[in-house]
Amino acid sequence: MKKRHRVKGVLKRTLFAGILIMLLPLGMEDYKAISQEDIDREERELEAAKQRAEELQNEVNNIAASISSTKDYISYVDGLMADVAVQIYELEQKIADKQVEIDEMQQQLDSTLNEIARVEAEINQTRNDLSDAQNTEAEQYNSMKLRIQYMYENGEENFMDILFSSDSMIDFLNNAEYISEISKYDREKLIEYGETKERISTLLANLEWQEGELQIQQNTYESNLADLNREKEGLDIVKQEQEVLKDSYTAIFNSKNAELDNLEKQMDDTEDKKALAQKEVAEQEERVEQAKREYAAWLAEQAKKNQDPDAAVAAKLAEINVTGFTWPIPGYNKITSQFGMRIHPILGYEKLHDGTDISGSDINGKPIVAAYSGTVVLAEYYWGYGNCVKIDHGGSIQTLYAHASAILVSVGQYVNAGDTIALVGSTGNSTGPHLHFSLIVKGEFVNPLDYVVVPKY
Image 1 (spheres, rainbow, N blue to C red):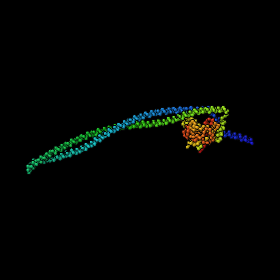
Image 2 (cartoon, rainbow, N blue to C red):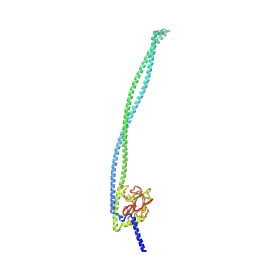
Image 3 (cartoon, rainbow, N blue to C red):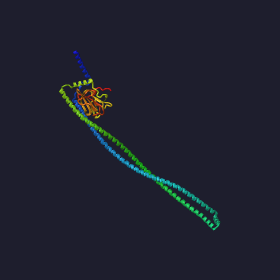
Image 4 (cartoon, one colour):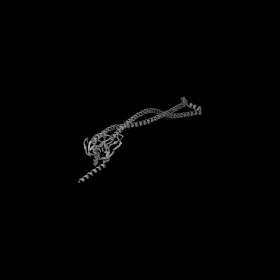
C-alpha cells in the first residue's frame, strides 16, 4: 500500500514537471531578474528619447524659420496687392473721367446731328420756297409779257380807244390811271419777286454753308469720340491686366496664408510632441533610476537569501498556467497594437511597446478586471500610462493596466481574478480609449499573449 502511494507521488511530480515544461513558453534559464542589460536597454531608450526631443526642437526651429519666412513673403505679396489696388483705383478714376469726356463729346455730336437735321429740313423747305418764288416770278413775268405783247400787237390805238371812249373827264383820268397802275404793278411785282428770289437764294446759300460747317463739326466730333473710346479701351485693357495681376497676387496671398495656418498648426503639434518627448525623457530617466534601484535591490536580496529566484518564478508561472490568466476586459478582444518595438504613435520614434492594446466599439468606460489574484502595488496616474493599476501576483510576476478613466482599487488591496479594478479610458499618452495590458516577469516586460488566450466573442 505504501509502495502504491509512493508511485502515485512520483507520478504526480512527473506530471507536474511535464505540465510545467509544456506550459512554460521559455526555459528556466531564460527567466532572469532585472540585470545590467535591462539598465543598458533603459539607458538606450533614454538616449533615443533625448535624441527625439532634440530632433523635435530642431523641427520646431525649422518650422519657426519657415513661419517667419512665410510671414515675410505674405507681407511682401500684401504690399504688391496694395500697389496693384492703388493702380486699379487710379485707372478706374481715369476711366471714369474718360467716360465723362466721351459722354460730353457724344452729347455734342448728338446736338450737331440734330442741328444738321434741322438745317437740312430748313434747306429743303427753303428750296421749296425758292422753287415757289421762281414759279411765281415766272408766272408774273409771263403775264407781263402777254400784256406787253398785246399792247405791241394792237398798238397805241387800244390805249387811245380806252382813253377816248371815256364818258367823262373823270372816267378818262381813271382809265389813264388804270393803264398806269397796270404797268406799275407789273414792275413792282417783278422787282418784289426778284428780291424774294434773291433773298431765298441767299438764305439757301447760308444754310448750305451752315450745313457744310456742321458736317465738318460732325466729322471732328466723331473723330474725337473715336479717339476717346480708343483711349478708354486702352485704359480698360490695362485695368483688366492689373485685375488679373491682383487675382494672381490674391491667389498667392491666400495660398501662403493657408500654408502659414498649416505651419502654425504643425508648430503647435510639434510643440505638443516636443513637450511629450521632454516628458518621456524625464520619465525614462526615472525608469533608468528605478531599474538601477531594482537591480541593486535584487542583488542585495539574492545575497541575503542565497537562493535561486528562477525556481520561484517558474513555480508561480506553472501555477498561473494551470488555471490560466483571466482576460482583462470581458467582451472585447480587438488587438490594436502588439507587444514589441514600434514607432510610437505620439512620440514619433521607435520604442518598445511593453504591452498589448485592446480596444473595440464603445469600449470607453467598460470594466477592467484583474487577470490573476494578487495585491495592488500601484494605483495612480503613472507617467505616460495615465491612470494605472499594477498587481503583484507573487514570484516576481506582475500585471499592469494602463490609460484607465477611473481607478477602483487602492494600494495594498487584495483582489481576485475577475474583480473589477478600473474602467477603460484614454488618459496619459493615448490616442483613444483602450486598455494597455502588460505582463512583467522579474522586472522585465514580456509578451502577455504568450501567457493569456484571446477569447472569441
